[in-house]
Length: 316
View (tube, rainbow, N blue to C red):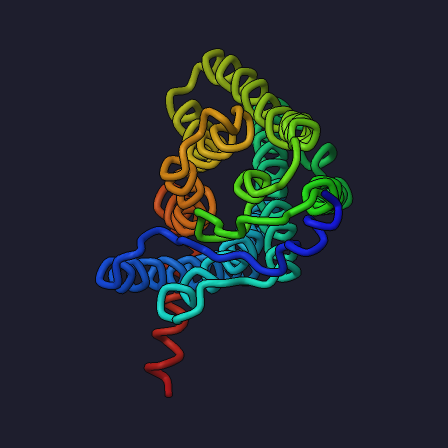
């Protein structure tokens, strides 16, 4: 048996992608190329506006800068490969490249989960403890929370990927997905994957579910605090600062939990790919739109930056 596995060890994977029809692939290529360009451009604009506007040098926008940079990294691990497969004749990826893509994709997804939890805590402190906000969420604490988000996620992704890639893959090597992701790779292993799936589930609880609980608890406390406010304008301002974050949380956590916290046997190929599109492509694209359209400070800073640019052009 060992000899057979050694002779048929998988050295590359073949992507089936989102469609096998050439016309549909061309349509999808155009759509996802547009999505990718909008995501990169939108998040760069958010980062730039926050960096040049003094009024946005607060913990909330420090974490938003982290989130925007993360979204650029996240979508860049998957979409360029997918676009290349849609227009190229070869839909394969070497095992080593697949492992790299799987590691960074999972790590960036985990970072987003933790960051969204941290951002919820930041809103809780700002609304429920406004007098102590600058002390509790000082610059040092913000940097430490961001560092913990990134380092813990990269470490967790490494553990999961080492366990996943240590399994024997002797065929088939056809990956019914558009990028290398742990659940889809596990389905191709030539052995029982229950232990690895259990480990993935445990890390999902730690990295996905615990931050989600932090979000729920934070907003429950925020809601109670808002209901006690006597001023209607105060309630509106408090809720408006949370609306953008809640929208992103609902979109990202809903799809991520449905992928990583359900039995693999109960998930369909088509359903898994559609869910993956939402949290790897759609969420990074809509984040800057949500935060710019629903956030008065960001919109004001963006208008101010555009006005300055127009003035410079006219003066020239």
